[in-house]
Amino acid sequence: MPNFVLFGAPGAGKGTLAGKIKSFSPVVHISTGDLFRANIKGDTPIGKEAKSFIDSGRLVPDSVVIDMVKDRIAQDDVKQNGFMLDGFPRTLDQSKALSNIASLDVVVVIDIPKEDLKNRILGRYSCPKCGKIYNIYNDELKPKIEGKCDTCTNTELTHRSDDNEETFEKRWNTYLSQSEEVINYYSETAGLVQKIDGRKTMSYTEEELKQILRI
Image (cartoon, rainbow, N blue to C red):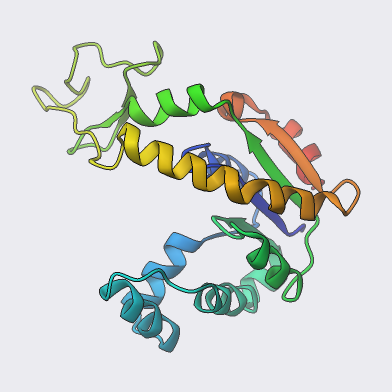
């Protein structure tokens, strides 16, 4: 199985795409968010180190994140089935560090226009009971009754506090400042970068994805 990275702005659809790929492939999905939670919950040495930074309000340094990824990649299920990295690497330094840990077959860049991504994030609401996701800017995902869940009677939909314009702009600008270097770095290897349309993430067929991932 190939080793590959899902690369894109926050909210571009990396998790959604990973779910589709896992439905037909045994490749191991490695999300840095999940790695943090698992290591902190398991009270591992790496988890303790990460928690010390988080508890003090500091950013977890690259060295700790890289150690987490390196440890996960070394496990037997990854050796057998390959890996799908989601949320790492984000920067040029992380990309170079990954090159020293493992070889990649594909870097999937999820391309999406800023306004489409903005509507996807700012229009995102969910039901606190059943977890169903809605979007007020998408006719297919709008609730039938404004502000209410379609299946949980009289349940008000909730909106994440960080799904706001100010936070979106910060995240978008951070992504832009880092992404060009990362994509250029991987573009130096011919054929490694595969761009897909983030507006059509859900519509890609199994065969199309297999072709993109070279499975």
